Length: 69
Image (cartoon, rainbow, N blue to C red; front, side, top):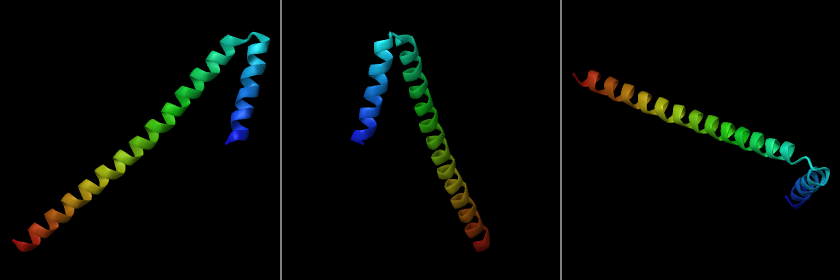
């Protein structure tokens, strides 16, 4: 992880030395937005799995109660 941190610091230092702060800000914004998108999609997939489990459990209960009647 330390190597990656050094790489990020080197890229940041290079951008700052060139005076290209707008591009650095845009890169950081895009990275943050992409990270949030990935997190949102992962949470959505997890939510869909939980909902599917819930629906399957309701169907199982319905079969159980219909068999008893």
